[in-house]
Structures are given as structure tokens and as C-alpha cells.
Length: 416
Ligand SMILES: Nc1ncnc2c1ncn2[C@@H]1O[C@H](COP(=O)(O)OP(=O)(O)OP(=O)(O)O)[C@@H](O)[C@H]1O
Ligand SMILES: [Mg+2]
Image (cartoon, rainbow, N blue to C red; front, top):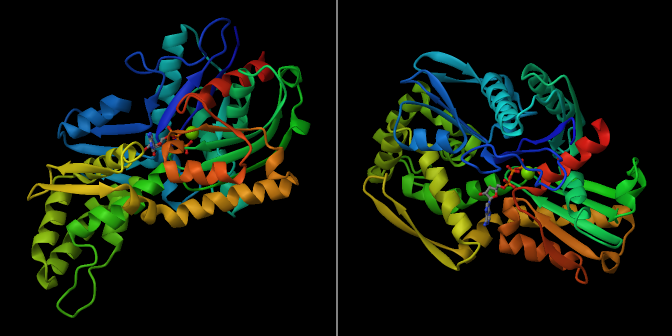
């Protein structure tokens, strides 16, 4: 049994892996499930904090409080040192994040029946695009939080290298593999030589031909789907009496998971009351004001995400928006979704083609493309990535578990 665990703190879901002979590495973190959704709900009525699925259920049941999802997206941004307010009390984001990592550790230890002081923590190839300084601040912040949560020794590993180790444990010959980990916050890639013999080496630097990534993931797909199809129902794009548009910032905040709470400030409320006086389509602004009054921003974002996921398997889906007033049923079409995210897909695609180019690898040399991460379910994205390596075999890993399982292998190798 390994001494250390692997911690995959994800934008949407987190896992903890621990290598044990003959058993799945993933520890059960909530209701017998290996994932703990990366969600914190601060319940103001009970003055209590809830995590994961329970946090979502608590929020959706209508309790007064603050929900935070996509906390990882705050790392490396100026918002990280900010806070959200609950009944006049400031709740620093840093505290919420530390509570979540602490809870992950506690639950993993309970499932394993032992303490973990050493861990390999996963990290995206870039927390922040094109800004190495902000990127290292992000890693340091996460390290500080992990130490504050009780880990004594940690090391970081790129998430798409961890996924590679997980895939390597399943093959019986050498392969040149493109790993594609499309998660909630980032799309991460590695180009690696894998084989059972290479897996035994302590030093893998020569086997890693390239790593790359971009800060685009499922939360961005939710955002652009929402902006294109849902926010117009709440008045986005509507005109004021002077013919200018309602400011779009309110809608951007509501469509972006980690900024939803910014729509709930007193200042925004007063501004929107002013906008309401001047807007031509008052019914839409009414919807927006009621949504904010009921703190239903996360409910709406969850509905949009549900619709997006349904579009992975269907050409269209109906969203029953029963907390909007009046209630509205919205039909979402795959073609509309594809158009809303086309610019993001193109950026992810060019990240992969640059990576192949930098590594000096011809597309036909790649044997396998390995998909993991929930957003690899987005058909358009998967097709476009696979098309870059047309002769590669397509393999789908455990979409939510490969990183945690691979980090567990890495932890065994590094800490014994
Ligand atoms: N079938 C599906 N089709 C499309 N998207 C999906 C599907 N299932 C889940 N997702 C999306 O996948 C994302 C979560 O994936 P995952 O758990 O791999 O991310 P993460 O590891 O938390 O994020 P990251 O690694 O970027 O920090 C969410 O945005 C979710 O909406
Ligand atoms: Mg991930």
C-alpha cells in the first residue's frame, strides 16, 4: 500500500486516489461515490458549511446562504483575495477553498482508515494562460491551502501526465499517445510514449514529448450557451429608452460559475432598479430581478449545464425553467450550442495542433488518442481533436476518475 495519496482538485469534481494492490485506487468521498463535486454551500440559517452533492441539494432546497462552485477558477486571478458576503459577514474565497481541500483530505482519510500527510496534487498545465507569474502564484496559493489543510509534504503533477499513467496501467505494448483531458475549467494535453516497461522507470522526462493546455473547459461552454440562448430571456440585448443596450456585465457575471454571487450585491440591485425604469421590455428585466431576489443564479447555471450535457447525446433538448417567472420551457439545439462554442473549440484545436508541431511529431505517428474529463463528451470538440490525429485509435478513459487514479500511481512512485 502507498504512503501517499493523489489529490485531483477539479473545477467541477474532485477525487482522491490511493494505490492499493488489487483494488480501485479511487476512494469513496460521498455516498459511496468516488467524486466529490467541487461545491461549497455556506448555509446562513444554520451557520454551517456543506460540500459536494449535499451542498447543491441544500442550496436548491432554498436555504439562505452562499453557494460556490468553480472555486479552482479563482486561482491565479485577482478575485482570489476577494470574498463573498453572507448576512453582512465577509467570507473570504481563500477560506472557502481551504475548507473544501480540508474536507477532501478528511473524507479520503475516513475512507482509507488512515491519515495522509503526503500527497501529489494535480494541476492543469496552465492555471493561467500566457502569464507565468500569475501561474506560479496560483500553484503557490494551492500549495499554501494544502499545507493549511494539514498535508506536510506535497508535490505537483500535470493532470494530463497523471491521466497518461492511468492509461499506461491498462496497455500491454508501447504506444505513442495523445492524452486529451477536457475538464470543467481547462483543456490539457500531453504527448507521451507509454509502455509497461517504461512504466517501471523512475524518471519519465524522455517519455514526455510535449505538454500543453488552455484555460477553456465545460464551465466556458455553459457560459457561452447561457449567453447565446438563456440570458436574452432575462433582458440581455434589450434596449433602453435612449436606444442603448442593457449593460451586459450583469449577464456575464450570472453566466460565469465563479462570478454568480457578484450579481447579488446591493450595488448591483440599485443599478438594476435604475435600468428597470428605462428598459423597453420590462417583462424580461422583471425575470432578472426575481432571479436575483431568489438567489437563483446557480439554479439557472445548473439548468444550462444539464441542457449542455443532454446535447452530447441528442440533437435537441427542452429545458423546463420552472423557477423563472413566468415559467418558461426553452428548446436547445445542438447546432445552436456548437455555434455558441465554435470560437472556443477552435482555440482548443489550435492548442493541440501547436503541441504536435512543437513536438515534431507527424499526426500519423500518433497511435492512440485517450480522452478523459467530463467535457470530452462534447461531440464537436472530440471530433475536431480526433481529426488532428486521423490514424489514431480512440480510447475513452474513466471520464471523472483517470486523473485521480494516475495521481495515485505517481504518489506511489514518488513517496513509496
Ligand atoms: N456528457 C457530457 N457532455 C458534455 N459535458 C459534460 C458531460 N458530462 C460532464 N460534462 C462537463 O464536464 C465538466 C466536468 O468535468 P471534470 O469533472 O472532468 O472536470 P474537472 O476535473 O472538475 O475540471 P478541471 O480538470 O478542468 O479542473 C463539467 O463542465 C460538466 O458540465
Ligand atoms: Mg480534471
